[in-house]
Image 1 (cartoon, rainbow over the protein chains, first blue to last red):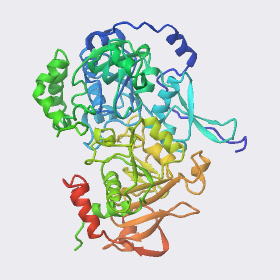
Image 2 (image 1 turned 90 degrees about the horizontal axis):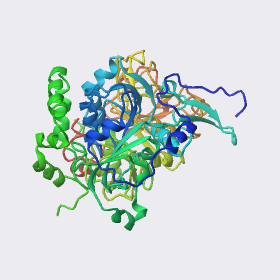
Image 3 (image 1 turned 90 degrees about the vertical axis):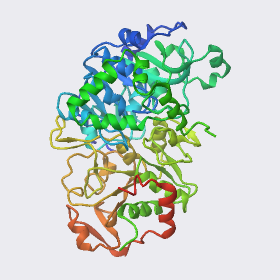
Image 4 (image 1 turned 30 degrees about the vertical axis):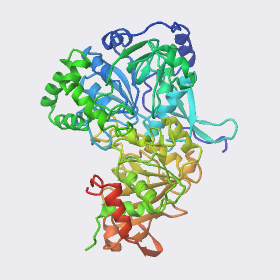
Length: 331
Length: 256
């Protein structure tokens, strides 16, 4: 490719600072102490998430999501958050209902995959009140990976020539070795990440089973990380199989034990999603007034995640969802 | 009267395009059904991949999410989204299927918005998800869609995922990997490919019960036609039986 090649850039806003030296300065002072980090969702959100922060959520929309943290963010009325819509489905439904978001990095939003579109999220995005920048799933994965690597960008070969690129904040570059045109994806260092895991010890050393989406990179890229966990295990379990450690303690700021914590989402090897409940939520969203009441009752007026579970069938419901999970031996 | 519906036809045709031993990234719905059908007929070693990280599962039933438990049920690998996308970028993924609200003559697809103000869209859709990545990086992109003149348009509101962009060589000049691009557009009426030089959409096969006029009337731009138009081979009895009994027994997809 010759020197005259025109290098384009996306025209929309970058909602986070990709500067790797600033990130190093933060991580230089992040605690390395292997201390007991167990706390409540209420305390973790109060202490680690501020209004205006850049928020990321682990898992995949309605699979392995930290529901207790999402609810708590709404209950505490956190405002003006930026959010990565990295296949955001039920997680984003909750944050939109709580009116927590004013900037949105979009890969996949407002849909619940094969379940249909969220009327409430759609109204919010069509209102023009939320600032929108377009990306793609791979792009957000690589932006998070760039941060996990301690860089300010990663080159890639997707997105160029499209309107998705035009409304992103990407920039084109030329490979210094081959002359090939690449897109440079800016590193994404979120202020806060919440990730739901299968098990971890009190220090935050965690195991996750099944598809990991971007969560290993996310735990490294985010400045503050909260794990919710199905159960707390002894540190000896971690040390017995160090090859299986998915997230190490030095990435983690708080640990919250939340059995059934991905409900109403799917938790692989544990329980399946509550499809009837997700459908009910989508239906009620059609009527904004009815939905406001529903959301208040379900989320704002429940004291904590246990109360929310009780309201929706409690342990009996959970046993039913365990029975329909595809990755357990039911025979 | 045909004893199959248009969705069944599209799924059967799509499945025939997936040869044994190939790799394909699919989403939920019809593409997943096509891949499952291919695996249960002529392509037992088809490697089915999901963008959240599930690779080569034995699917117990149709997933509702590309990240749900089924997508790595008895799989070869439960990996990550960057790993799947990097496998595409490395040139190891042969096929993918996309959907969208609009498609133009160069196979560019819109799944982002209708309207002319990005900040305040008239109608908002989910956006790229992994579609742009898969369209950029997989060797061959296919689409299964009902055909009408609104959906097949030369005035696409937003190019979410790249086809051949502005035609000719523009896709590769933009920086996308050489040799990639749209391959087949499978509709209820016809099967289209793309002209080798101009990259303009070209009808290859006509589905049973439709005429050239039907196909052109239900397309918002002038179609090109293959020199030798071939009639689409309708779904075979064994394909339909497996599709109805094993792939989608609850008719979630084929009942639409």
